[in-house]
Length: 391
Ligand SMILES: Cc1cc2nc3c(=O)[nH]c(=O)nc-3n(C[C@H](O)[C@H](O)[C@H](O)COP(=O)(O)OP(=O)(O)OC[C@H]3O[C@@H](n4cnc5c(N)ncnc54)[C@H](O)[C@@H]3O)c2cc1C
Image (tube, rainbow, N blue to C red; front, top):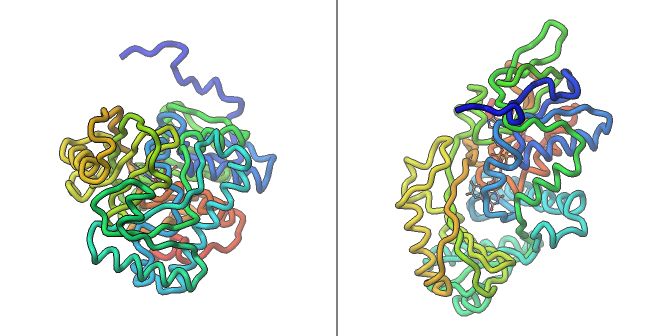
């Protein structure tokens, strides 16, 4: 393949050769990291190094749910973290949404496709519904607002058939994730290098770090990795902590809107939402081909795409004769214990990182990267979020 002069990535285009901080990865996490760094110190010279282009990883391929909590029902989170720990994680995600609204979304919600209509967790089986009802009771005692829906209410609110019931989390929200990342990019004063791949990090005798890339060297006293599912490809420390995991989606052409908020089904494994413009986005069904849904390829596969379409026919007949317009996948970073992490590399304390968002980076990364910047500036971060929990 030949390369034109204009598309060539000449390091000569750089304004400077050294920076105060180098962020690697231009997804929501990398841009949020740059945002909080600059909020801490507006004079910082920051470079963002991105292998492809802005929001081209999972940040531009997700469903746009801004979900509180975790990838599990709250009672299961309690089983894992105890009541206090699970509540702390839930509050952290609530804070993520509050911070996004306060700092970025502000009064521009409509142009970012932002809506705060809550989100549903729907049950096709009685056992999941009874679990959800007990979740609602527990949450009520914690003043986390939910509402229980029987099958006819599900049909009325989201037009979905063949569910026995569900609950609605009243505070959840949704957004156009690419518009959000672009808005973040517009807010930060950084040099963004797209099409530049980070290959290695080296220490220099004067105490700085050099990021080796296919477009030359970048130097700074600190490097902040925001690679999520791609982390282990750059540094082996992530190999047994953040696993690249593929998620697939399907989009159907618009019909008049009947669904008032995004929905999860089948213990968070599957999800769908009707966009403000009427399209249906549906994703999930990794369980159909679990073994093949690992790694960093962004292909789609027949069995999962068929399962997604079958789900639509079973539960959302409004889309029965509607064409599929898009099929895609993205690479998520699943943490070993399901929770995001911030830290610095054990072999290099000047290389910081955030990741392991486990399918919830829109719901977690803005607050996570705020805590990453706390760590950079020597402030405490919660134990459950710190990578030190891995020893
Ligand atoms: C199908 C799907 C649906 C999802 N739905 C939701 C949802 O509804 N709500 C939610 O909260 N989360 C959802 N997620 C998860 C969410 O998208 C991620 O958690 C989030 O986008 C992670 O952001 P990030 O910036 O950490 O990673 P990414 O957006 O993946 O960004 C990492 C960037 O690093 C770049 N990169 C990789 N290697 C290098 C290198 N060597 N040098 C330079 N750059 C490099 C990549 O090109 C990429 O742009 C979903 C994910 C998928 C795939």
